[in-house]
Length: 554
Image (cartoon, rainbow, N blue to C red; front, side, top):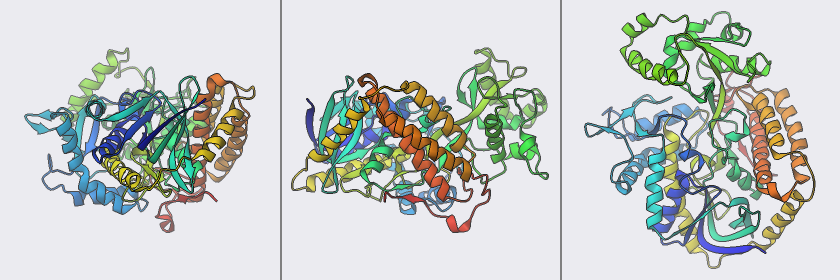
């Protein structure tokens, strides 16, 4: 027997975008609930630290008085290479400062790092000006402030629930069918739903995301009939893979490190055109994410190619070392590097690695998706009653995304989504129940618990291995079509069912497989290379494709 709950606005997710959306909806007088797999405010990508600091872009002139919302807008337009929704870029540029002020207000000014009373700011990837405000301990201070504010409001928090699918009636979204930790159904009716469930980089074996980010929002929106945009654009880049996992600091490329495969063979030289030198490639590596916009693309292409050919270490990684670097000259030439190197060297030394002597293992890691549910300026999806924010939504990002933009996007569009969802719900004459769709979802779940099958872990590893080779960095017509064929077989195997004990895992596997198919379909349509999307069979950009690829169910 299922539990049933009713709210005006239901927000799915437990991170920064979700909490901001819930606060905004509550401020509009809507009866609001947050539903999340983990503990709201202590789970999801916002809470998961992959670096010592986080970046939050605000064009307030804190370091560069010449910066402005217009400059910020132009940087977003440049990074997107024709594929962003420019009206949403304009909104983000104009409302970024108010998003910072809101967080400062509710936290009594404890979110953003300061020095001598001034914000700490630096220049992040793809930006032309320093506007990335520093958040120490990654984004945990943002979540702490939002979590404490949620606790002060009349907002219901439903943690430990796995959303399965959206409820619909007469073409509009009206709630969600979820499972509790015991696998029992929980039906939540709502006048409107906000998707803020994060991205889907768990689709890849090497990723910088927590276990609970499994593409749920994308998959549920797609199955319900929402339009998707820019799904082919995924941030990926070089990270340290062993003996620990960590981002590889961009400034370290200044030391001109050597990259070798497991056999000790230089890697980069194999993949360069005759007129391009390794030094020229490394010199242009000023951003973490892979991008085809400059020569630095050959680093990720080389590392991923060697992995695909099986030339890596036992873990499939390449080896990076600094043995040929003249550090004395580099320190004299670049005092900023000298200062940063001391910190990095000591950090590695404490973990048993002497960077002057020892190699580290590196690999290409998936990070954030730049696409998602297509939204308008009200954060509304193409389905009535459905809204999206944060990484689940597409719009202000495109082929590339400015470093420090996802965190501010979560706050700006979380706020807009919450307000818009509240206004929609309050405007309904009656809230539909979605009883027919609930019955259909229940029948599908019965099938998932009716058979015997491989372990969920084995299926996930198979999916991740295939995604690594077909979708990570290097794509081609042959590889993408093979991936879709294999994916259909894998989805059929998942659908044949398993045991009730792993029902939540099966749902997440279904969602990841659904997202993998969306990425592959969009990548097949984009017969060119643009920003984070690289087609080995179409290595150049096609001016005719300077627009988003929008996917819509037939």
